[in-house]
Length: 177
Image (cartoon, rainbow, N blue to C red):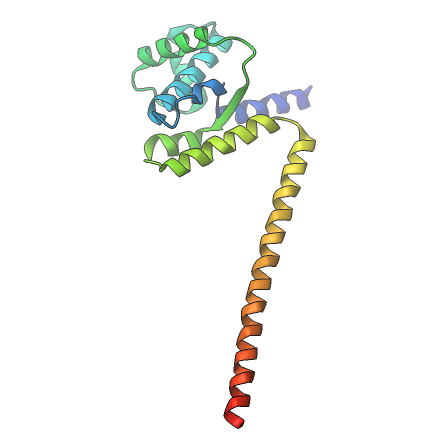
């Protein structure tokens, strides 16, 4: 019984750290990232209200409290979230973005490269999902690539050192002759 309570508490803490949304909301991210981020925020707020309070607008402060955010225009956010929620078909893949990443992209201007990297990360995350074997394969793949890069750097360093030793030895021989 207590374990179930702890598990629910941990899950709630994790949910508070993420905005969950259908991945289709990222469709125009490279064109207008600000609007996409607003839509993600509004969708997450409305989705929470829909699940916990049957879409009751008067409970929007509860959503603010749950996510630890302040909603500037509560009515606009609620209405936009509702429109998005009702217009998106069921069974679309969902993804979560950590609030700290969302706020970083919302408040700081990002380059196109940084936006593409975020989209790539989200795409990989949506493919991997909760599949532990895929996570391990990707993790070990990354680890292996890191090892390869480290070994290549060491080889390049050794090559430079060998070249320097050869040059110095050759120069010494030339000087003595």
